[in-house]
Every structure is written in structure tokens, then in C-alpha cells.
Image 1 (cartoon, rainbow over the protein chains, first blue to last red):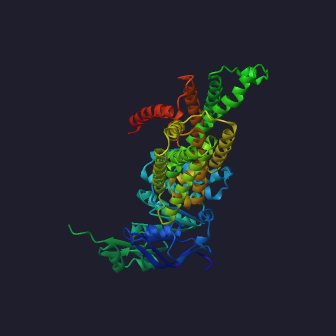
Image 2: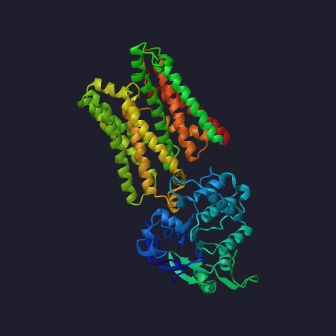
Image 3: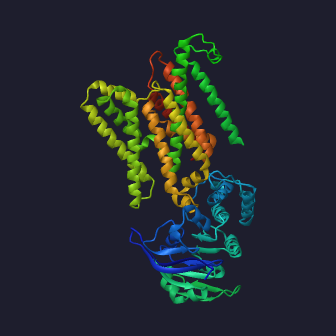
Length: 258
Length: 327
């Protein structure tokens, strides 16, 4: 069980608007890629925010690396986990400046960024295909490039656990696949929410299916992607077969009659 | 590099402004003879060391302090309209000044004004913290609380003045219009220390401030202790503004206008913004005070009237230019 990075038990959150998440128990293991699936408002972002320490659960506990998440300071937590939100970012900042912000939890107040940090940032810029745009203001970039810049910031943070809220949002097909391959190769533990089930099924080790704040299913794509479960969650009949390339699950939803 | 050079240029401009402002006044003071120590005229030396130098320094420091507070509050609240006076400082100070001019000896006025200003800000912060504990994390709660406290303090001050003699009301009104004629060395020292502390902290915490300017959640997930940083910075702002208001009365518009000007000149990165604000605020207030002393000499114009007058016109010009460029 030493590769258990984050787990929660009987986790529950009630929001003032009446939304209730959980109770649910989950385990995330080092080096695995987890896909979080569910319809709009199913609680994907809320769960990610709970794990990121941005919201406090009403009951239950979250254990990160053998220590209660609530026992971490903001800084030590940010060294263990990096969070990508769906929020709009300031635009008057260059990509490089944004990436330097990712080093924040590793720096004491008086420390300046050194050559090692700059090398690290240049490497991440290459990995995310942003070397050309490094000194461009975020506001001048396309939506996809901005998204990549934010992902690059998450990677610069050098955490073992990445919590990504819709990371492939705005990305074109090529970068969607490139990003997920990069995440797989990184050997980090990643929990990411997706709308594209097939993309998640291709790259993720395990999938987590949510509906109205409740955990419906968790396990390998074969276990989770059952036609009846998917119809229950997404409200459309569907067909599950195999992708001709990888043999992973492929879901096709029946179209709405017109 | 470019921005460092620009900062240097503005430092030179500040030095030149101070030298020029030291020469301006009712009594001609020749700097070289004073600094070379030829004790030709004791009165001249007295005027220079006890009146003119502290006044010019206080003008610079007060301008810098107000501008830095404005920039910081705009950063922290992510609201372009945030202003040091929005937190009930002026009305709190006015309340303190009213109480002191009605019941206390005249010398106690700055102290009472400071107490009033600081009390108002602490009240705003405490109420906002209370609201935050009840789940309202939004920083606009802070601004709205400030507005409410501000109205409350003005109402109480007005009530007291309504029943007081007209002489006291006059005194309060003139004091609120702002003046640097009460400048002395303790005020200069106090402001200098607080301002330096604030700027040093901000320079070290530039990454934290950038993250805070982005969003609370982002700052938190980047490892910033959001509540602690915000509280420390707000308290420093409160202290700076309270000192300025206590000694100089109401000097409006500097905290709102200068950061916007600086954003156009230096960009909106944290360090250039704050240090640029300090420089521009200092230069602006030094010149406005020189004008206030000389335009209608020997009569002195209230400072707050001049800052609001030229500030608002200049600001409108700036906005019309900006909107033509950007929208």
C-alpha cells in the first residue's frame, strides 16, 4: 500500500445551494492517471477543489502522503499537489512569468530564481510546445495556447499529484493527445476531469464516474464504461465497443432524434 | 532592463522635484549656503530645517504612501476602483477629529484623527473577517463593509457637528480639505518607516502578490497563505493611510489615480507598479503642494481641493485616451 498517494473516506460536502457531494471513498495511487467523468454539475470540479484543499469537507477525511490534508500549510500542500482550475487568468503576464509563478511554493521570500529554475522552465516550455511564445503576453495567445501555458505552470510546480479540471479544454486534437501522452510518460499521479470519454478511456488507468455528487463507479475503463451506467449518467443510450487502434473502450452515444 | 531604466529616470525626476520644491516659498532659501554650513542667517536655517524640509519630505512620503496603498488595495481586491479612502479612513479620521475639537485640547487633533482612522479600518477588517467566516469569501464584501462603516462614521460626525458651535465645524471642514502645514519630523519618520517596511515586504512577496492578484483559489493552490498575507498588507495600508490622514487631512484622488497612470507607464507587474506608484505619487504631491503654497501666496490653498481638481481632469483625459486605444 506504499504507493497510495491520496485517499479519502466518507468524504462529504454540503454546499449552501443544496448541492451535496458524497459520502464517497476513493484511492489514488502514485504514477497512475485517473479520469473523472460525469455530466455538468455532477461535482467533478468540487471534488477536485476538495482534494486541492480549496474547500473544506463537512465530514470525512482526506489523507495525502500519509498525512491529513488539513494538516498541511498552503506551501507544503502546494509542493505535493498542483491544481489547474477552469478560471480565467490575468492576461497581462508573459508565459514565462506565469511559469515562474509555479516555482512559488519552492521558494523562500528572499530567494531569487536561479539557472536551474530557468533550465527547468525552458524544458517545460519545450515539452508543451510553447518555446516560441515564451515571452508573449497571455492575452495575445489563442485559447489553446493559454491552456497549454497553464498546464506548463502546473508541471513547473513539480508536484507528485496533479489535479486538473478539464485540462484538454480548448486544445486541438493533436495537443489533446500530446498532453495526455506527456502526462502518462511523466509517471505522476494525475486526477483529471474530462468530457471526452473516449479520450479518457484511451489514456487513463482508471475512471471515476460521478452523478449528482454521488460516486457511481470507479475502476478500469472496462469496468466503468458499461452502457447502462453511461445511459443513467448521461441520459442517452450508447454502444460500447473497441477502438480499432488500441483496443480500449470506445463509446458511441445514440443521437437525439430530430 | 527597460523598466529599471525608467524607474531610475523617475527617481532622478523625484530628486529634481524635491530640490525645486525646497527653493519655492515665501522666504528665499539658498541651498548651497545652508548646506555648506555658513551660518549666515539663523532664521533662514530654522525655516529650512523645521518647516520647509519636513514639509517637502512629508509631501513626497504622503503622496507615495497614498499611491502605494491605492495600488496594493487595487491588487488585493482585484478592483480598479479601490482607494485607500474607501475603507472608512477619512470619515473615521473626521470622527476622531470632530470629537477632539469638541472636547479635547487642540494639540490632540492629529492623535484623535489617527485613532479614528485606525479604528474605522480595524472595524472594517473585523466585520469583513466575520463575514468571511460565515462563508462570504468575496473581497467585495470588504469594499462594501468599508462603504458602510464610512457612512456610519460620517453620520456620527455630522450629528456631533450639528449640535456644536460653527467654529468647530469650520475647523473640521478646513482640516478635511487637506494641508501639509502641520508637517513635522515625527510624521516624516513614522511614514518613512512604515512605507519602507511595506515596499520591502511587497518586493520580497512579489510572487505572492501576483498570485493574490490572480485569484484567492489560485494563490492558495500555489502555496500562498492568503488570509495572513492579506491581513498583514491591509494593516500596513491602514497604518499608512491613518498617518497620512491624521497629519494631512483628506487628500483625495492620489490613491485612485496614480496607480492607473503607473499601469500605463510601467505596466502592471507587481514590483514596477508599486515602486512606480511610490515615485509618481511622491512627485505629484510635491508639485501640488508647491502650487498650493504659491498660487495665491501668502494665502495657502487646501491641498485636497487641488489634488481632486487636477486629478479628476487629468484622469478624464487619461480615460478618454485609453478608451480610444483599447475599446
